[in-house]
Length: 194
Image (cartoon, rainbow, N blue to C red; front, side, top):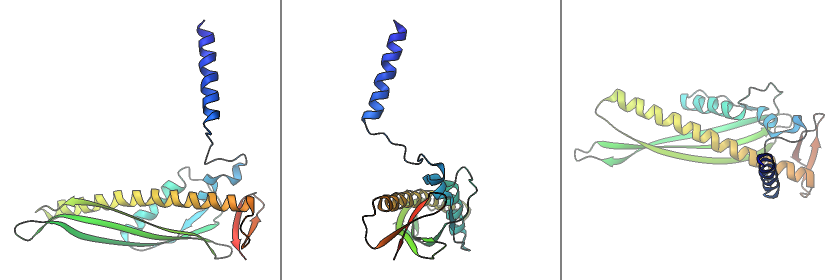
């Protein structure tokens, strides 16, 4: 009796998963053309500021968490801007809370042709308490900035995945007359303007 219940539950869950349209997003049948390998082929342009280095580190951690060794196909160019504004003024005229805003514009370029494949922007912000102790205020500001760079890295990764999926769809359908679909030896595809 329990064996029949287990089989019934398994079959119902199997049919439910298939009926709801569940698809694996990050893997294709061909491992070399999967999105995880495409994300691993992205190199990030270096910048000297500390906040840019944090963003770059977080992006590498989130784009290639398995540290897959591949040849570089894309270059990610980041333009990071930050601003710190007071949001709460005390009766003495000092700032009680500060708001940090980080915004980034990115361009994803094909290394072989130096043409822009995708671009986008993201902005995140958060605030922190300003205390009388300068050290505590500096630590709070650095902590908030680090958390914001993690959020920016996640947003950029999501936008790049959307861009790569759209590129693949356009390449497979060949709907856009202004693009040429190039498939390399690894069965990985990309779209380049004419």
